[in-house]
Amino acid sequence: MDIHQIQVKYDPLADRLLLQIRTRDDSLFPIWLTRRMVMRLWPHFRGMVSGLAVTRSAPSALAVPEARDMLADAARQRALKSADFKTEFKASNARQPLGPEPVLPTAIDLRPAQGQAVVLVIRDSEGRSLELAFGEDLAHGLLTLVESALASSEWGLVAQPASSAEPAAPLARVLN
Image (cartoon, rainbow, N blue to C red; front, side):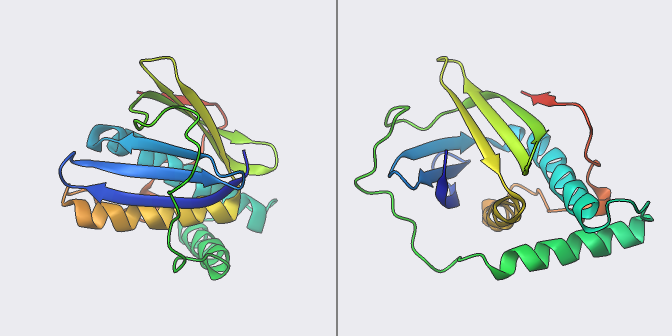
């Protein structure tokens, strides 16, 4: 799947975050993220992205926590330089292969991938499934979008620095 645009916004009526992924072939994949799912997923996603960024920056170094934070922050700043947060998200006239209703995940698998920063496999109770692979730049962009949506949600979930997030684990995780 070739991701073209990502949007994350808080929907106060549903009290959920709406993550929308638009691909280059004009497919739209809307996904609801509940507070509970974000609480379980986000620290691991953040830790995995930060850990992979540090590993890529200094592959053979064993960084102390302060250096890990600086390397992760530098990688994030570098990735966000190429991000476009000004172009309006285009959802109209897009195909919706999984149907018009957003996917409400019952489980999300989170794992590192070869040549990618992180892969999310989202599954719902209706048997729908979606695999999203985020390169490092795109993963940092998603981190920024979710943090912005969390600020407007008033859920009390504050983005923690990368060092306090759980470090990337070599094994795949299932969050549900």
